[in-house]
Image (tube, rainbow over all chains, first blue to last red; front, side):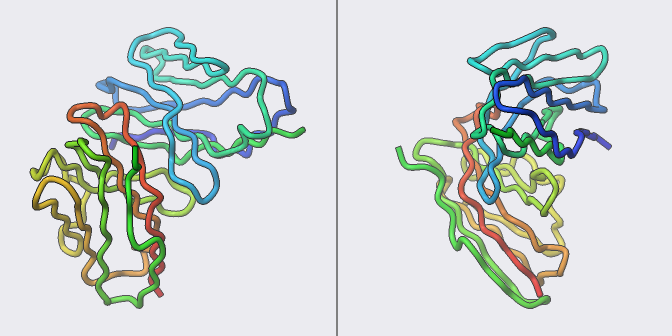
Length: 108
Length: 114
C-alpha cells in the first residue's frame, strides 16, 4: 500500500513566522513530490513540485526533499493570514497519491 | 483562459439512486482526471484519461462507478447505485498531455447520499 502521511494539525503560527509542514511517504519508487494548497470549500491549487533531493525555492515557499529518509517538507516564510489553508502533500509513483493534509492557521 | 468546468456543483440523492457528474477540461488539455475527496481526506484518483483512452482506473470501484470521455474532451462520471460512503466531493482536473505535475482542478461537485 502506497501511503502518504501528514500531521493533520492544526498548526498555528503567528504572522511573519516560518511555517513548517512535513510529509512522509512509503513507496521508495516515488518520483515526484507536490505541495497543494486547499482553502476551505475550494479545490486544490498547486504551490510547487520537486523531483531531486535538496531544496527548491519559489518566493516565500521552499520545498525540501530527502529521498533516503522518504521525507518531504514545505517551509513558508513570512507567513500571512492569507496562507491559512490545508496543505496537501502528493507523491507520484505510478499514480498520484495525496496525504490527508495539514491545516495551517496564521494568526495576525 | 477558462478553467475546468464541472456540473452540478451540489447533488443530494438517496442511496441506491444513480447520479452523473460532468466535466469540461481546459481547452487543449489532453489528460483528464477524476478524483474523490472524502471530508477530512486528500483526493483519491479514480480514473485518468489521455484523450479518450483510459490510462489508470485501478482505484475506480468498477462495480458501481463508470466514466467515459468519448470525444476526448468532456467527461462524465457515473455512480450506480450510490452508497452512503460515496458522499464526497468529486473533483475533475486536467493537464497538458504528460504534464501530470501541473494539474488544474475544477470547483468540484459535492455529493451527499442520504
